[in-house]
Amino acid sequence: MTRAEWTDRRVEIIVGNLLRAGVILSALVVLAGGIVFLVRHGMEPANYRVFRGEPSELRHVRGIFRGIVALHSRAVIQLGLLLLIATPIARVALALFGFAEEKDRMYMTFTGMVLIILLYSLLGSA
Amino acid sequence: MNNLEFSLLVGLCSLVAGFLGALTGLGGGVVLVPLLTVFFHVDIRYAIGASLVSVIATSSGAAAAYIKEGFTNIRIGMFLEIATTLGALLGAYVALMVPTPAIAVIFGAVLLYSAYLSGRPQPVVPVDDHPDPLATRLRMNGTYPSLDGPRSYYVHRVPTGFSLMFGAGALSGLLGIGSGAVKVLAMDQAMKIPFKVSTTTSNLMIGVTAAASAGVYMRRGYVDPTLAMPVMLGVLAGSLVGTRVLARTRTRWLRLVFSVVIVLLGLEMLYKGIGGTI
Image 1 (cartoon, each protein chain N blue to C red):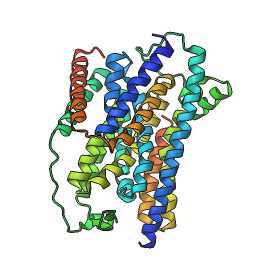
Image 2 (spheres, chains in turn orange, red; image 1 turned 90 degrees about the vertical axis):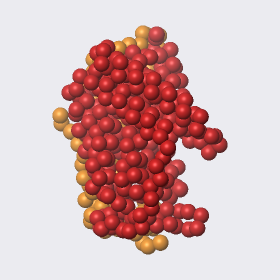
Image 3 (spheres, chains in turn brown, orange; image 1 turned 135 degrees about the vertical axis):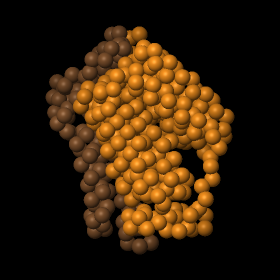
Image 4 (cartoon, rainbow over the protein chains, first blue to last red; image 1 turned 180 degrees about the horizontal axis):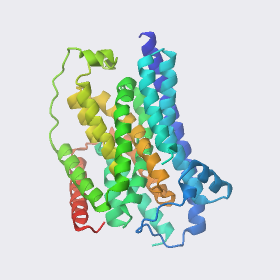
């Protein structure tokens, strides 16, 4: 194996562990928030028929953290989902470091593009 | 139905969907949205938000195991992710503007098409041993482990693959599915990447693609935490068990049953979409 291949392989294994950790962590957070939600509101009627859109507390990173400080179970679940969305983004960020270590300019550019698109999607102003 | 009954029932259905999706290789995401809208009367926008989130979970959960086997090609994946994430952003923004019956119709058509793809015998792609200049410049050619040591392969028709991937990303963002079928089609048939490399690399890309549209959906208030909770946990658990069982079962019969379910759900989505009752 060449040095580049070896680095590729090592980065891939770190990426695999990162993905697994991200999924387990977010599933645990979602589960914890879900249990609290069902204990508090389990007997209330469920209705998802009508689309209302989530309140701004559950739409943005800052709102979600405000909800958690207020101990809202829905905000805790949303944090878990946010962690889940962040997991592939962290994977791309890690790949950027891998390509930087190989001094692979071309793939640093490609990875940077993907990262910008992902961050725009999650944090963009619109 | 109260919240507790609803969560348990949705969680159980998602578990079965995730299990069958992993076992048949068709993915659980594709049946989730019709299941939630047709049987649980969930608004399709909430259903798509919940499905997208669970697609990220299954893709990332399975990726860890695939990466260890050494078939994934990180360069092919990263380059094509430029196309899928741009497509996913476009799909998500289109979904915000298109009326829901139109989304249901497109969904129905995609379900029927994926059932057709899975029912059709896999065409054999001839091996092409001539390196393609563009793929070589992009350093996409690689090797994969085989019984006689690492075997090298060459990637072809990069522009065609890239465009197909843009389409796959747009479908994923519009409908909240992984669109693994289109991704494998692009990589297997257009780019002539070996089957195991394309399926595992495509799985890795599904999470990144879904994350690109999930961000838009969350910011627009389409991701309902209490609906996504049972869906995501159920699909994740089901798919993890499904991947374990996969090695020990013959899936032909199951694929057939699952394809019939997909066709029926597809027809129902078309019917509801055209009738405007969704």
